[in-house]
Image (cartoon, rainbow, N blue to C red; front, side, top):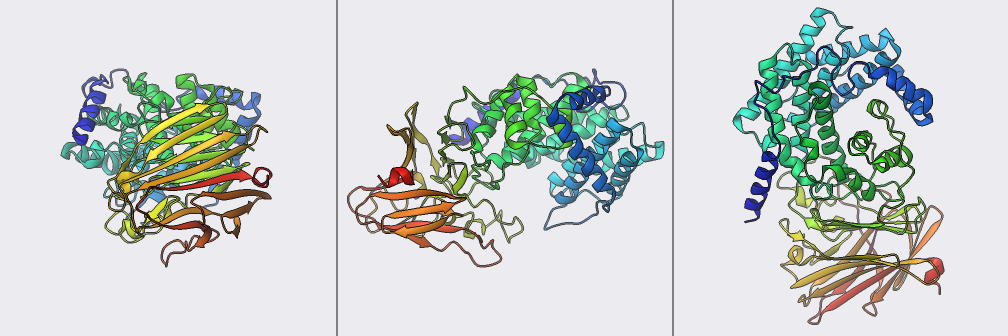
Length: 591
């Protein structure tokens, strides 16, 4: 039934977009080059922005310095890391954007020639590793942007070489996938956006020379993309976590921007439900520490996202631009082309948010960088792409520092990282999460944990997630509730309460990973980090005590250097068991 519902939802999403037939889809193609993302004539507007806005000037200087650095580096090479050429594809893409941007703004021929050299080297590769199609998609994107932006600088022979590589090593490989019903064209996660985006940009770059192939590719990509874009509904969240939100959303925006600049339309794709709120998820998923609530295979660094500028302009949401400009401070080439100076802060944005489709909750005491508390609570689906066995896991910022950390992913090249051994790795299995570990057994990989309660007021925010399905082999019912409450003196306390029923004799471990230095004393632990101290107290059950648990798995896994794991060990009972832990400042804890 669940699969049928999703299939039906995808069908509706696909039908909501009126995509012209292949022979008609290019009828509004913009003449000449550049026409992709930053079309001809955009240069003067960017020069004006750089003159008028300090942040834009800083970005330009950074891009200029990076371009000069690239001139002294060797070009990309055909080098696989594990099964992936992806590192080289991304290097080529990054360099082409940087070098071509500086050329277009400054007319420095050195930059154009080096970008062309980079593309010619990549064009000479034996292939772009289509067995791992992300590699092919990103390399196609790289050469397409360079071909389009530097078209008038290249010789006819250079154009022909790069155009043929885009066609044969990129688009023809994509054609095979579309015709065979390949999995990424039917996926609802990041591969869909990246691969469709790369193919679309490649097709639009050479559309006037190869209209039949280009029209067919663009048609196929525009029909496929809504399957993944349905995942943004209803409120912009991304089930693969903030890290893959950035990857998926960036490529969605690359594709939409290319369609709009090359054809004058995105055929209604950007109007699909939830996409206008995508930036809201990024804003709430980043704590005052500027670290992300990095559930799933994502690092805790927030990363930059030029897509936030594009989204701000497309949906008239200045807060997206402000957040990217002031909080993250990105400095990529596309931050320059899409620069948006608007926005004065996040006043009016709610402090707590329940993202319903992914069942993730975030709460914070203010939007200030020194906010007393920020907490992210993970519900949702263990079976989502890139998920860890982490239902109920949480992260915690206190006074602007990350006190409870999600360890993030391990090395993708570990044996069978995405296969049979996935749940044996510490950072992916339940032992490595900030949640309950019962009987030293993993959560059910197919479990779904809904947020069953969410309420907010100026003095209190609370949410509860039902974890029963995750622990069905060991307990009849398990819930986790987070309450963030303001005291009469204006300070806040955070209480995390687990309630377990039907788990007699079970070994229960409460876990929280931290970079802080802990000082343990029975039912109290004081965590010190960055000159701040967070007091953690066990409120119930009586007699429970904190201990330090091991969090260093054997090689070749990441040894988690610098982390410690705070733990509470309990024995299950016939009666319902309540485990309640309070987090507070020392001023509150000592009263």
